[in-house]
Image (tube, rainbow, N blue to C red; front, side, top):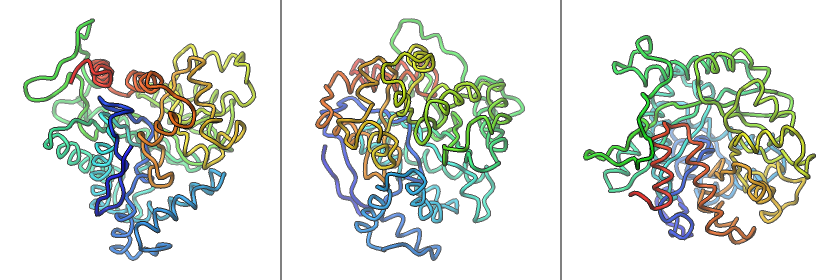
Length: 403
């Protein structure tokens, strides 16, 4: 791993040893991924007071403040990033820079999540906020491709689990998915189910003459739903109305669970939310170290993807039952036991991390092999909220079978 210094701050970049053909991130928060210099710049524009206006010192402040051992205290740092993301230009800039940082991180696919309801204090509507982020993501993707690279980036919209707008956010997701699947962009004309099926069979998805890959999502488009925010005391079942709508509309769902609460929270996410993936899920084995409980076996055998974020988990105390180091983190035990493990950064700013950095630490501190890294990347490709043709292309890309 190396570090490239830019005017916006340090960006960790892949040296090719971890993922020479590309990496995938499934659990990345947009409001936790700002460059320190961007926070300083945007704060000056809106008159928001920061702990410091020196980008390097501010980045360190975020990391130190997040390193509390408590999820609620970790989340307090977002007051500053959310405060400077209340206008369309700010959202576009943050989204565009996020894509550039993904490319520098060696990613070929990223699913970035954020909560639109937290970004309307400046007068934006929910749709205007999502439009701004989609525009910024699309601009970033276009810039990467113009430079000869490839990265696909899509949005997962979050509702805050301690608030009461989940039905509204669920309707927003459904509306955006319908519009994306309609040739005219009119959600009333769309057929529920999104991208038309592609006959992938056993053949290799190939890039077309214009550079498009079969099933490749529209840059910045909305592909799924999540519940974020404080987990303990705010179960998924409290948002049953929203989750029932999403199930009826066949919307892919990933839910934060098993981070600040234990097995029951994960069971609730699967029962109430029909979650295809679990955000974190690292507390699954806290009270089932022998891995014999029905819930544990269900998650393993049904290949429910776990979006594990080791550095963040150490900061919030999510993995404290196992120890305080990457070597002790349960992700290695989960991987060895056959769970569908993926590795993501969670919040790049607060944890001072990236996908490359997470994998680098797992290799150097937890003894992961190149085969382990490839395994979690293939799992991420198969769990991505994209059409199967593109899942297959991603898997072949990260294994070097296609370019």
